[in-house]
Length: 287
Image (cartoon, rainbow, N blue to C red):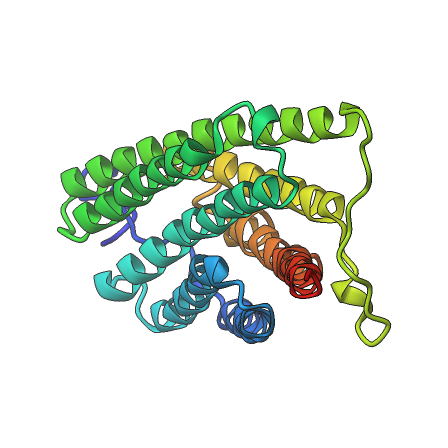
């Protein structure tokens, strides 16, 4: 697909630049590394609710590898659709694990009564919103695979709808999290609960507040990324963002890599698994 037609008008182009091999390779390696680190944490803490997050990291890796293939043929539809879909749908998987983390923290703190949304509905509501966002973005990417100008435009609009749904649910989640956090700290007899410390691994000495602040940071990073992608698609195929590849790496790749790093350092399993071990130890000592 060329940039101009026979009448001198602008046509739809898969890329307005030639994708960089070094940039794609670097982030492919970064996401592989983060995937391995998260897999180790997941197994160590048995935090299986974080599997969607791990899958998201793997999709990010595959997406950037696909961009390497696009470097050699910028008009090939296959690699373009693969990288577009995988990089788009990875963050909703990150969000799914983040939603499940809050529900588990509320239960661990035995603070279900002060949650703005009942815990039995909390994870369901946000995960359903996440699934809707995920399906819309997948559907939009799949629609674009038809390769026609009309399909590309329609697919982009569907993707924007999915991103907006993600923003709405994510924004509400941050509000719910912040209100819960504030209510716990205002509660009479509040104690900064933490699991049994282990001098052999300082990273396991996480309090519930450490995890909450890590979730806030991750949410902010994903929100900024989602706003960027909405603006990108709203601008259109010939927009400012679509013509500058470095913006994708600054406002998507870097932000998602930071999300993975933050939630590896403050991995929810570090608190949830060890607080569970503490509770099990206390119960085993009872007569």
